[in-house]
Structures are given as C-alpha cells and as structure tokens.
Amino acid sequence: MKLDHRILLQQKIEAGCTPIVGKKILHTAPHHDDIVLSYHAYAIKNLAGNENHILYATSGFNGVRDEFIVRVARTIDQTTIAVAMKLSYQQILQQFTQAYHDKNKQQMFVCKMYMKVQFVAEIFDCKNNDAITDRFNWLLVYFGSKKAGEEDIELVQELKGRIRESEADRKWMVCKGDISNVNHFRASFYHADEQTFDNEMESDIERLTLYLDTVQPDIITIALDPCGIGPKNHFTTLQLVVAALQRSKHTNVEIFGYRNVWSNFELQEASIIIPVTQSEIDAAKAIFVNCFATQKSTLFFGTDIDGNFVDQAEQIQKIQWQQVQDSLGDAFENNQTLIVDKVVGAIFMKKLTIDALAGMIV
Image (cartoon, rainbow, N blue to C red; front, side):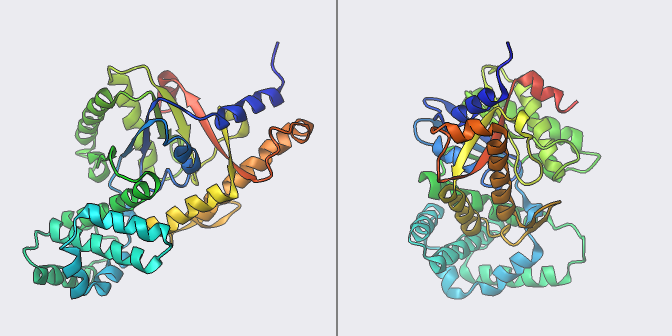
C-alpha cells in the first residue's frame, strides 16, 4: 500500500529535524561559498556530536575580480604591513572571530587586510616590508595594464585563490572555532586546458581517492547541479567526486546531495527537508557578507528573483517552505508538531547511492 504523500513529506521533515550523531561527515563544495548558500543551517546543526571534515575542490581564483585586488592594493599602508607581519595566520583568524562576534566591522576589515599582506609576502617571496609595499604597487601596475579577458599569471591566480580560501577559513573559525580538517584541495583540472585536462583530472581523482580512503567518512555531501546548469566547475567537481568514490576502498558511505542558487530540487525529489528559522537564515547571511567579501557584491539574475547570491538563497528557502505547507494542506494546519511559528524556510537535500550518483553524470 502506497503511503499518502503527506505522510512521506512529514517523514522527510522529521528526518531533517533529527540531529546526526556520532558520524564522520565530509562536506564537499566546488567553491568556498557553496555550502553557506545551500545547507549552512543543517551543517551548523550537525557540528556538535560529529567529526566534520570540509573539502573545497577548487581554489576559486576565477571568482575574484581584478577590481577587488586593486581596491586592496590601494588600501594597504605601512602600518598595516608592519602589524600583519608580526602576527601568525592563526592569530589573525582569532582576531577576526572575536571581531565578528563583537560585530566590529572595522576590525574585521583590518584582519582581512592583514591576511592579504601575508599572502602577498608569502606568494611573491617578499624579504622585508618594503618589498611587500613594492609588490602591492606592482599589482596596481599589473592590473592597470592587463587586457580585458586576459588570463592572470600563475602567481596572481595563486593570490586570488588564497584570498578565497581564507574566506572559508574565516567562516569555519566563526562557526566551529578552528580550521582543523578544512582541506583546500586545489584541483588541477581548474586551471587545465583542453590538452592537459584529462591528465590533470586523473591526478585529481587519485588524490581524492587517497583522501577518502584516509578520512573514511560515514556521510559525504556534494553539490548536485545538473550538467549545463550553473558554473561548469560544479559538474566537473561532481564527476571528480563520483570517480573517487567508485575507486575508493571505503564504500560504506551515505551521500547527501545539495543545491543552492544555480538549481533547485523539486519537492518530490527531496529525501530530507530541513526547516529553518529567520535567525538561521540571518546567520548564514551574516557569514556570507562578513566572510565572503569577494562574492557579496556579485549579482545573480534568476528567472524570478534578482539580487546577490545570499538574497537569492534566502528567497529559495522561503519558497521551498511554502511548497511544503501547500503540499501538506490540512495535514500541516492540524499537526502541531509541524507548526513552528519561527520556521520561514526549508532546505532540500537528496540522499543517493554511489550508483545513482554515477548515473547522473553519464
């Protein structure tokens, strides 16, 4: 006998409300802001009581605009450089975290500048503070003479990627107090051309397979954007993870698929429905705005909603919760356990087997 769709729906909601306990969770993302724009609230709910690992597939350097680096280079002064070079990266992260909790935007901004000073010093092998100043001046000249559409030199790509990685580091310091188990994978396919792509991808698969065999997660999350929808690297990352899972000796793993602003699950596709409150949405928005500076001014132009990424994510979650209520109908109105006044949105996730996941990339 088939279960009434409303009963199935309630079961999916109950699954989303039930905490995960005693598991090893591997959160994967193509880019550093993908998790915060999709299932951030669910990830935070499951930090306690589990061992969490995070893997960002690409360095994301293509997502950093030249104008962003130019603004940074014009802002840096000798005092900022002098202080930054006396601190460790960990100390800067700790200062940023304190400033975040204090809602001290100026101090958060200063910490971000400290990080960029350290990245320039490290990447360009600056021997002293004057050399760091010279390198920032060089960056102004470099971007001033760069032609539209021209590819950055390798060191500038590395700088942009390191900036994006630091945004995720800040997020996890704020959310879980450390950056242990955060893996910036820096997939080689991300900068490969047509001639080198297959070899670079094979190398990435081997590295990721080894990582999976080492971590041995019980649960792995993965972005499930279909081919041709959203950034190309989302689907390439899906191919990478599928290939590594198929090769891995560790096969006892649950797969939780997620989507964010680029595509969405239909209600019937979701295996897990996570109700979220406005305060949880606001927490994700605050993380995005304060930690992901390279992305907060990026506009998303969707079919129904225009705005920046985090506003788009909020509206999608609210639309999804309305779909849940509409589908439940009287069952929602009459079920006190589902009537939570503070719930305003829903996150949809989909459980898959490795075989089902592999079928998505054929």
